[in-house]
Amino acid sequence: MIKFFNTLSGKKEVFKPLKEGNVSIYVCGMTVQNRPHLGHMRAYITADLIRRVFEYNGYTVKMIQNFTDIDDKVIERSKEFGMDYRVFGEQYIKEYIDSSMKMNILQPYYYPRATQHIDEIINLVEKLIEKGYAYVAEGDVYYKTEMFKDYGKLSGKKIEDLRSGARIEINPKKKNPLDFTLWKGAKEGEPYWYSPWGKGRPGWHIECSAMSMKYLGETFDIHAGGTDLIFPHHENEIAQSEAATGKPFANYWIHNEMLRIKGEKMSKSLSNFLAVSDILKEISPNALRLYYYRTHFRSPLEYDENSLQEASSSFSRIERFISENASGNDLDEELFDKLIETLNDNFNTPKTLGLIFAAIKDANNGIKGKSLTANTVKKALNILGFELKEERKNAISEKVIDGIVAIRDKMRAEKQFQYADMIREELNKLNIEILDSKNGTKWRIK
RNA sequence: GGCGGCAUAGCCAAACGGUAAGGCGGCGGUCUGCAAAACCGCUAUUUAUCGGUUCGACUCCGGUUGCCGCCUCCA
Picture: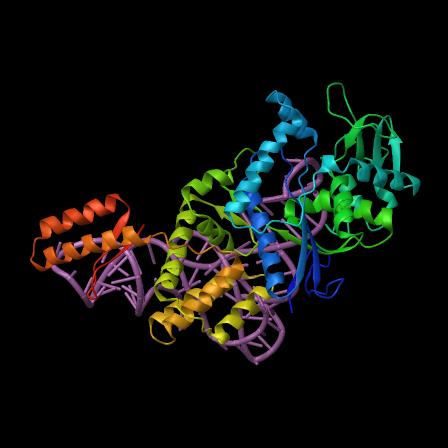
C-alpha cells in the first residue's frame, strides 16, 4: 500500500491506480532556456524516487517527462546568443540528460518536446474553441477562464481573489485578465508554425496537456512537478484538458518544495542558480542524491555549501560500512520491511535514512549481525537509486600495493619509521590511503 | 492586498495524540611508533511565543511574532 500527499485533495491518500498494477506518471520537465540547476534536479530526483518506489512495489510504471523547447524566454535568449532556438535549447537538453544519467535517474519512457507536437496542440486548441472555452483575438487564442467552473481547484484560489491581485498583466486582447494564452501569433523574426489562426506558436501550458494526453491518455494517474508550477501552470493544464475531454485529467498531483539559496528560491530568472553539472564535479552523484534525500521532498531545502559536504561524509559512512561488511544474501526482514513501509508512506526518505544509520550503529555495537545489516542496507540503497561503487582496484596493481604495504610493515616492525612514513606519504599522493590497525594494515583508494 | 506553507539542539532533520530518531560538527575514549581511518560514549527536562482542549500535545484549536512560496517566466 502506497500513501502520499495529493495536492488536489490537500490530504495524504492511499494510491489507487486506474489500471491494476500500472501507474502512469507525467513529470513536468524543463523549459530549456538555461542550464539545469540544483533546484530542477530536486524535482527529477523526487520523480525518480517515486518511480522507484512504485516499481519496487510491483507496479509497471509508464513515465513521461517533457521538454518545453519553445517559449518567449527561449526565443529571447537564443537571439541574445545569436543562435537558432533549436540549437540553443538542444544544449540544455543534452546537459540535463547527461546529468540525469550521472545521477542514476531511470530514464522516462519518452521525452516528448513541445515543438514535435504542434499538430496535437492545434487540435486541442480547436476543440476548445468549438466547445466555447476559447476565443480568437488578432492571431492569438485565449482560454476563457470563467467558463471553467472548477478553475482554482488545484491551487485553492478563487477567481475573485485573483482578480483583485495587483500583479495581473494587462493585455487588451484578453476579455478577462485571467484568461491565458493557448496560441500566440508570431511577431516578425520569431519562429512560427502555420495554424488556422495564422502563423504562431503554442502558449505555455497547452503543450503539457497535449503531450500528457497523447502518451498517457485523457485521464492518467499522477502528475508531478515543483510547487511553483501549481499556479498557474498546472491549474491551467487542468482547465484546458478537462474542458476539452470532459474527463478528469490527473487523479493525483505530487509537488516538491523549492530549493532555496540565501532565503530565496533558486531559479533561472533570479540567476542565483548552481548548475548540476558543475556541482557534480565537486561531489559524487550518490552524495548529491543523499543531500536531497535528507530533507523530505515536501519541505523547502535551504542550500548552503557545507551541507553538500556533510552529505558526502554521511554517504561515506554508509558506503564504508557496506563495503567492509556486506557478503552473502541474507536479509534482515524486520529492518527491510520497516524501510519499505517508511518509503511507502509519502516517500519519507529522511526517516528511511535515520533508520539506516540507526541500524548501522546497532550492527557496530553487536546488537545485530554486521553482514546481515550491511546486506539489508545495500538492498535498500539500491531501491533508493544509489549506485554503489564498483571495486576500483584491479588484480595486478592490487598485488603490487599489497607487496609495498608488506615491506612497510616489516620496516615498522624494525622501527624504521622514517622510511615507513615515506612510503605512506608517497602512496597517499597516488590517492592510496594506508590504514594501520591491530589486525594488520589495510589500504584503500580514496 | 489575497491564498497557502513552515518555525524541533551549533548546523541539517525525523516523529504528527502516548512522553524528542538520525546525520554533520564538537568534546571525550578505544586502537596506533606517530598520524589517519574506523569504531564507542557524550552533546534538546524540551519542540518560535502566549493561551486553550486532553489523563497525556512537537503533534489538535485560537492569538502573536518571524520566515517562505504562489498570485508574473519558473522544478
